[in-house]
Amino acid sequence: MFHDLFSNQSKAKRTPKSIPVTLSTRIRLARNLREFPFPGRAETSQKRAVLTKCMDALSEVKGLDDSLSVEVDDLSELDRQVLVEKHLISPELSQVEEGSGIVLSEDRNCCIMINEEDHLRIQVLRPGLDFGTVWKHVDALDSGIESTVGYAYDGELGFLTACPTNLGTGMRASAMMHLPGLVMSKNMDKVINAVNQLGIAVRGLFGEGSDANGSIFQISNQQTLGESETAIIERLDNTLQNIVRQENFAREKLLQDDGTRLIDKMSRAIGNLKTCHLIQSSEAMDYLSLVRLASDFGMMPEKFRTLSDRMFIEVQPGHVQLSAGKPVDPAFRDALRADLLRKEFLRAPHLDPSPAAG
Image (tube, rainbow, N blue to C red; front, side, top):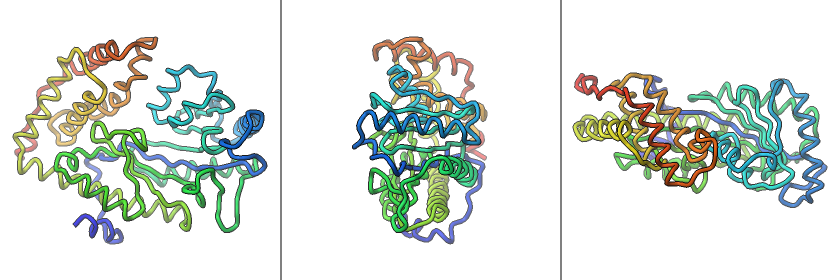
């Protein structure tokens, strides 16, 4: 069933946008300067030369006016962790010790990493499912940068990258999706297997090797060679639309077949968030996921969907420590996290199951 659904993408229907399953859209381009070795093989002096050259070039690019430029080794460990949790930099860049940098646009929707795995990782993020706008933005930035630095490019292979899996377009397009219906109905593994056969990867909240806490998954293209950027985006977008349809179907079926149990889980989640005194980030994410689901069903005001989306990030370890103003041990973090959640959900209303009855 799942394989047939995802392989027949041309006939996929557009999903109503009444339930925002997709949290955010991101496109990242990997680029390298042709006159320098890749970062993994470069001497520190060469990495510093790349950093200086890229910083100077980016300061002249339209769309990066008033951007923030900083070297990674000038950031504290906590600063780096917060940037990873916001999905602005990769965990790999946060571990680099020397010769790497970050350029952040004023609105924080664009981040360019310098000397991560490649000389440049250009990425643009936006809320919701909006590949068209994101691609237009990142393509314009890429063209502006290319006009000032020479990219490593081969006529047959395309853009040359440190990892062969990025050869060609050098593009990774991805969406962050909230899929509690597929998780609770135990259909998520079937979806993952089906889309993997189409060259689509499914990962956890923070990418490869991370857990899908809160039923949040990062879904992206794997193939970068032999297809144009627009073809890759169209294929991924069709797949995501089908996943949204399957998620909506799974939610409705859960409500119809075992609605009392589902409503009980969502109600308990609200109660736990209002009364907890110690809570880990993974547990908080799972409760927030259920609150968001309740809002999607119309059983809670829409503002609690927005609150849940914000809290998905603010309950992460780095953000909890940022609010405390200093690094703290895990046990104290759990107490601070609980304090934050109690304050945010103190006046949350009881669940109203009447929309389900309708």
